[in-house]
Amino acid sequence: MAYNLLKGKRGIIFGALNESSIAWKVAERAHEEGAIFTLSNAPIALRMGEIQVLADKCGSVVIPADAANVADLKALIAQSVEVLGGKLDFILHSIGMSPNVRKGRHYSDLDYDLLNRTLDVSAVSFHKVLQTARKLDAINEWGSVLALSYIAAQRTFYGYNDMADAKSLLESIARSFGYIYGNERKVRINTISQSPTPTTAGNGLKMFSNLLDFSDRLSPLGNATADECADYCIVMFSDLTKKVTMQNLFHDGGFSSMGMSVSAMEQYNKGFEEDGHKFD
Ligand SMILES: NC(=O)c1ccc[n+]([C@@H]2O[C@H](COP(=O)([O-])OP(=O)(O)OC[C@H]3O[C@@H](n4cnc5c(N)ncnc54)[C@H](O)[C@@H]3O)[C@@H](O)[C@H]2O)c1
Image 1 (cartoon, protein in one colour):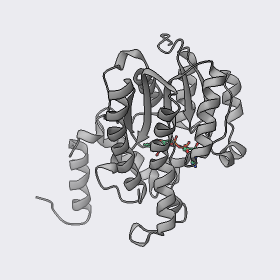
Image 2 (tube, rainbow, N blue to C red):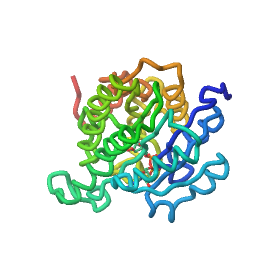
Image 3 (cartoon, rainbow, N blue to C red):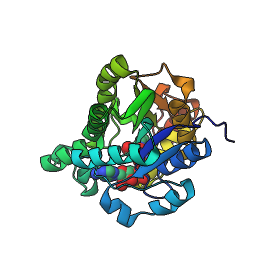
Image 4 (spheres, rainbow, N blue to C red):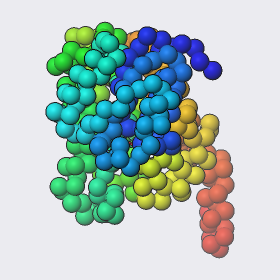
């Protein structure tokens, strides 16, 4: 159902690669809610992905940009303001990539050049987007900027590798820049910490299907889907959340507050019994 929550708002959505991308779902919902926006992704992703299908559906222009490249970001933001006919009200940073994960490097044997690229693309790019937008004075008062994060920023999830470090940095940038941009121009900056979600980035992680299942069973409401994440992003872009800033907002069916559930404890005990041990 549409509520016209973003009627008259302009934005940039980074990171829609294919139909399963969280950014893809956000773009569809933002369009339904009356927003106009440009779509951006890395030049290589534009060649591999299906973003033009989404652009046609949403009446959007696609503008390539490597989010780690400030010159690309300057051109993207300036062009977006021009194409959309005014300053921006929202930006979604839905970007993550670790070459160490891709190459199967263990966390105790990272390649540091690759680590720099992980941090640059997945976290520092958020700072670059914010700094560039601020210098161009491209965001309206009460504008809302979001990046997507994961709970491995706070807790250890084996296999999330150097992306955990990137997410910690990402969330810290939201707080540090949130103070400056809020104080000066009333722009709010938040991260949404989303449940594991079956997307191209998600599926690239070690033991991802196990993680998805574990997290779904432990969360009282089950995992949050990409569509549900899109709904949350829309509310965060709307005027209904004007005083929310510098937050890491968990969108995970309750997972982040759980320690042990009844069914997890039963399963744990059963494991011991099957092994011939009694847990007491
Ligand atoms: N899938 C999950 O389980 C999950 C959970 C929590 C948070 N997240 C986060 O959500 C965000 C979106 O990921 P997704 O799950 O939709 O996967 P996805 O693979 O669909 O999206 C990741 C996007 O990052 C883009 N990207 C990579 N390098 C880039 C660069 N240099 N410049 C610009 N764009 C670049 C990719 O092209 C892709 O569109 C990421 O930040 C991810 O870490 C995902």
